[in-house]
Image 1 (cartoon, rainbow, N blue to C red):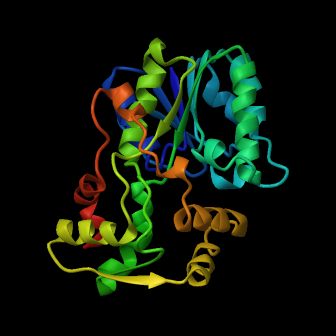
Image 2: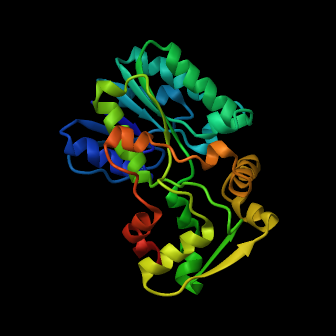
Length: 279
């Protein structure tokens, strides 16, 4: 049996479907009650209390570990999940980490994630680490303004990074959970090309079949908006990357194709699949 944490998100949902299609027994875990596909058990668990995960891990052989932002807060102990997982019989863990662990290793959240990666390596379990860059699904932040006014408001309109479709992350995670060949792998996951917010706006307009205007925010305006839904430090870190990506953050990785045998999906593919959110 495979346990999937973060099961209601943009990665957890398609990962659960992929594992179920592969004929695996799956238990999904999230902080809030949620519907699960037929044949999938769902449990409501707050990962901030690692002991609360123990019922979900009973009988599990593998774990997909995705940590919500609050687990990086002061006093949180996400590494405490590894020991109970191993004690409960889990033999493989696939960890969703961050590209920032390699590209900007000294921020507080990246230091904690690196510590979790190190704990996993020392655990004696089979493991794989996924380090995605920016998500195509972050464009959902613009959905309300596109629906209401056909406008995307974002900073750094002409600065791009190679964003990745979360569906590709989910498929890589499924491969790492199901295939021994990926044990011990550290995969940097990006899209196939650098794309700017202005170009993303054009892709959304093409998917909608109607014009969408781009409005460039100042960094201060963007920070104020982001700080309403995430810690200020994380907002600053995100804006640093979006405004001044370093060469490692601009690099297009081949790891998606290496694992899946195909190129990553484009932002235009993602926009077409999610166009209903913007109508």
